[in-house]
Length: 314
Image (cartoon, rainbow, N blue to C red; front, side, top):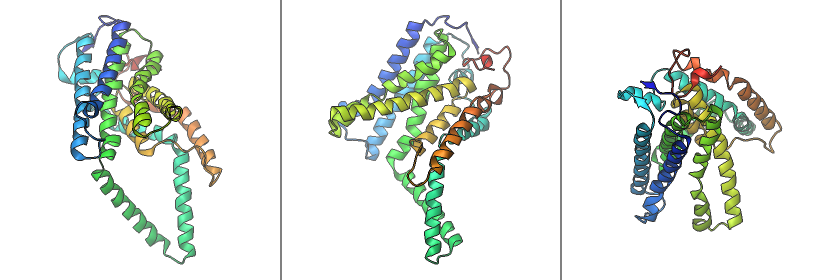
């Protein structure tokens, strides 16, 4: 499948309008069960399936709309999926390298977990227990408990699987090709796309203010912090897709971040946590471009007609 020159058939206004429409449609359809069907919060299996079905519908509609707007020539389904970064080639690179890169930002979190485990081990040794047996038993039980609780928890399925997949499809796979073909520069797209992503989280303001009875000031503070975080992550996820041309890269980073939560920067337990966090940030900065080198994720980089401009990166 070939692409026409950037901007051919897609104006900046059309691209931005389409992105805004997708973001609004995603949020509106996701929360329609509450507003229209009057369903309770998604704490039941039926309620969960209804909301996730709405998210799936909005994702499919966005994919179809984007395919109609983008100046695509050819009709092979595999080629169309490549436009969205949905590929099976170089899959292990797209899984391993972005995951490793993202993990560096959580160096402080890993250090804190290690310190907690070390302290627990010392306390167990002081009590005269067998450390090796205790560690194996503790890790085994915690692993089994986590698998069982995750598999049976609707929020876990939403946070770790459904939400990352549908959000990456709409806010990265559909919007980035539209904005690039609309004539926006690569770096503009990286920082513009997260704006639509953050707008999709504005609904939390009403959730905190109306449902959880937060004061308006506190609700704005909480949501404001969330928006800053989503913009930062959205820029990073957009960078990964544009840099690699592979949707798996931002998807695995999204799942990992949802699982880990916010990175631990400081802990009262030890200054080592902050030191390790700084080392992780420096490592992330040093490896950001090497671990996302386009040639790791694509067979060719010269004279290509790619949709994500990976061939223009050095």
